[in-house]
Image (cartoon, rainbow, N blue to C red; front, side, top):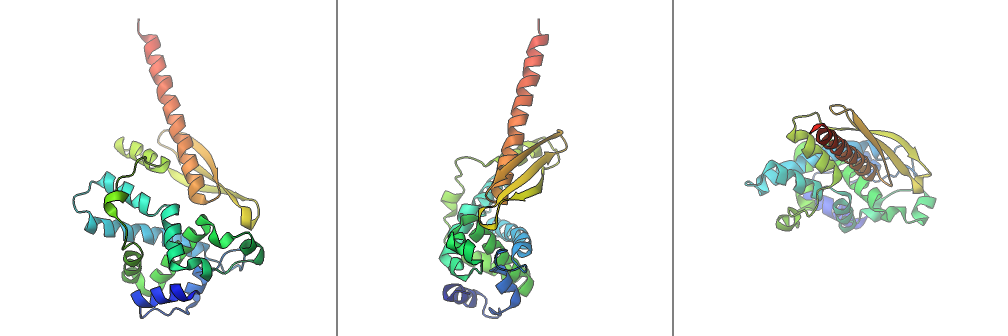
Length: 239
């Protein structure tokens, strides 16, 4: 683990054992060991969303539900987490296969964002929600919420979710279908299914999140085409 990351962890969580097996696993890429960080990433993603939601509720007492959702989405996006991971020196702490590191896999935005989430998952298991909240608050302490909230364009997943919520429909389900390619050049294939409107679409991306965005965009496109079709049929019936 890098000296910079250890220093930050000790500053925020002095009781945390920085040599714990969980923290080592959080920094372990699947190209290095079968005991890698993907399960911790799964947990950390959920914990991060909860911590950020709570943090935003306190920081933005007058924000609407929609504003809070968009701000949270902007804070936990891959680009944002990649930047935080770099500032923490997480790229120097990653354990990965020689081939992966030679292709600068330790600098890949999706890899660093995933490792940051895995680290949060490990911290949660070590000290519970309070420790996770303290760590998240530290990592996002310099964020300018006034500019973060002004998201120019909603991403596809947010648009789809808001469309469904406005109509009181069930939220979409995202299912990982396949992971193609080698460890250092993976392509994720995700299916987005909206049972309430009987629509689905598949997306591909260099990260699972990117694939989910593309799949959501596919469903939105299908909804748009379906809406146009209904309008055309309606016009055809008028005489």
